[in-house]
Image (cartoon, rainbow, N blue to C red):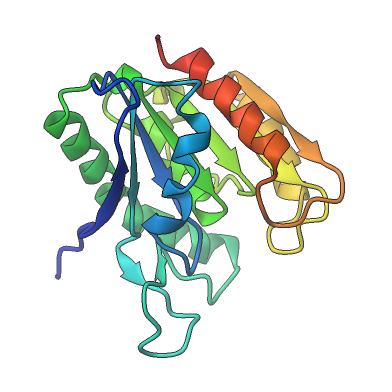
Length: 223
């Protein structure tokens, strides 16, 4: 079986010049690492010692025309059946875990100083991987995503890391009900969950969401 890896990623260096924290940005379906790395400058003031890294997902997006450049996915969404989505996240999880591990080693950063930030499918991956990473990570900031709950996993072994979720109430791609379901389930399992929904916001990130995310990153990454 072919071993898939993350082949390309983008970096935004720390404002201070010395990386003490790591923020890994995970994009949504059909996008690429260049998309979310553009958010790094907005968060630098809050976490000036953080290195931002934004990888391309490991698979070419199967919902765009053949040969369409720079469109990637963590897993297929041709089927929105929760079982199929969960299976896709399971396949991609080891790839993402290896990438996190490699980045921590390359930059000599402790796991507790690493946060995952996701948008849409990237949030789904962040919530699937971060609590079950071999070492406790700092937390997850998730925009417009969903929790792909794996009932086969022993949740008692999960790291109950801080999670901050933000979602538009007018999202017609991932409906806001996904936010409420994720928050309810995570809180039930003992996670510290914060965040908010935004009236009239579609499937995107607005200024309030960026500012809220900055405050969260600052709170979980030691300065």
